[in-house]
Structures are given as structure tokens and as C-alpha cells.
Amino acid sequence: MASPAICLPKPGLVLAVIGDPSQAYWCVANTVTCTPAHVVKDSTRNVSLLCAHQNDNQSQLQQITRKITSSVWTLLAELRDNEDEPQEMFGGKVYVKMSQNIRDTFLQINWPVATEETFGTYRCDIVKAERRTQGILTEVTSEVTILKGEVIVD
Image 1: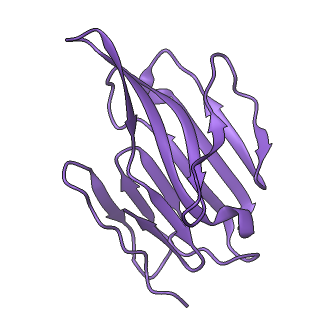
Image 2 (image 1 turned 90 degrees about the vertical axis):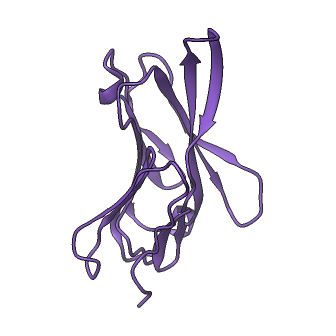
């Protein structure tokens, strides 16, 4: 079995490991959360990738994208106004919640069982309103890589 997930912080990102490293645990970096730490094809159940806010800033989660090896980023899930119906996408269910309270808004993909489509590198794209310049900024979270055997947060 693969060693526990290695979570490497980038400057300015929040990183936390909760729980016994020998068990499945959460890796949190900025607004991307993945669980469990060990993922085995056709065996691991309830694999989850969650994009959510860490605070009440004036930003809006927009989409989850995925890249396999060195390919281009592919849109997997997108948050749209008043849409909270789960969608079937890449073998997983997509759940979204829009709320007036930014902290309660999230975008999540759940795979009942890990399949080949579960593995890859993921990120969340965020749109943020800049008060000082009254402009719009797009931010990209740190990347989460789900490899066969472990999850790595870059």
C-alpha cells in the first residue's frame, strides 16, 4: 500500500492534516479539500473533492477543472445561479449549493467508488470582486492530485 499522502504547502496557503495518518484523513489547501488520503481503483468508496470558502470574502466559486498527466484543463463542474441539481459527470455526482452567505456556498464531486476517471489533477477557479479597483479577478486554488494509492496537495 502507498505511504500516507504528502501535503506540500505553498507560501500563503492554509494547510492542515486532521486525524491519524495511518487512516483516511483530510488534506486542506486554500479552498480545495480531498478525502480520503488513500485511493485504490475499484475499491475505495466515497471519494470526495470539495471546493468551499475558508472565509467570507467577496468571491464566488466558479468551476472545478481536471488535468490528466500533461493534458489541458477540462471543465468538470460549474456553479451557476440557482442550480443545485446533482449532475452525472466522469462517474461521479456533482453537488452545488448557492447561498447569499458565501461561507455556505460549495461545489463538490463525489465518486461512490474510485474508477479510472477519478484519478488526475484538480483545481478550483474562483472569481473575486476587487473593491479597491472595482475590477474582477480570477484566482486558481492550489492543485490536488489524486494518484492511484494516494492524494497529494501541491
